[in-house]
Image 1 (cartoon, one colour):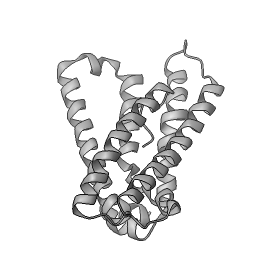
Image 2 (tube, one colour):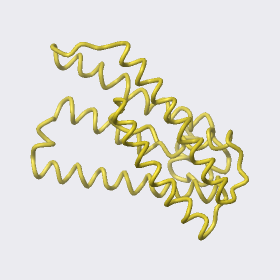
Image 3 (cartoon, one colour):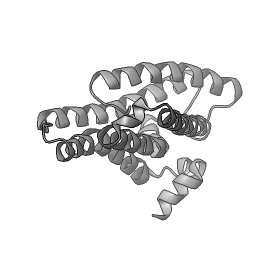
Image 4 (tube, helix red, strand yellow):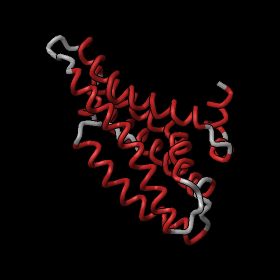
Length: 186
């Protein structure tokens, strides 16, 4: 629990100490919420919804593959910008940035299953938009800290890598949505 709180409150330290158990657990929780919890919750709430085990297995594999792919892409691009960090370090540490993903995944699942009316209400739509913007800002902050602490990039190289990876993250987010992951595993 102490390591989770450290990763939440001092992500730069968690990145430096390569808290791989925390990172992988955060990724696993995110994948669980998006790929298993969502369909199971729907099947409990809506009697006409039937859980498709094959779909759950496929999206779980896509979630794992997505994490490995984004770790590889981050490593490759940062390597082009001069990073000396190994690929295994990226795989071990990128998951520390998944706190916002967990919250986003959970909010999306709960609001879609129980409160679909929120998306059709101006007030609730604005509130949820503010929540998601806050989560996005938090994720971007963790992303910059990651580039600085793990990749070891500074100034212009950090900005260049940030822009290139941001474009690729947008493309991978679209791909995640295409394969059925409502909240990207990025």
